[in-house]
Length: 67
Image (tube, rainbow, N blue to C red; front, side, top):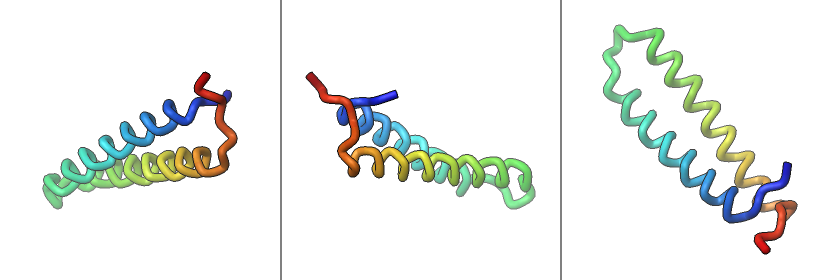
């Protein structure tokens, strides 16, 4: 499925926002909350990977035209 540059840019902003919120939440977790820390860390990894893939897609220029 092809996405426009605008759609990918907006998706990137949404991912950045989620990463920032999750990082803040992770910092506030108690050290004893091991399972929650593990889950948050795995989610951060997945979100950062998704962000990198969005950036790569925009960089290749292989997106649908906006018109």
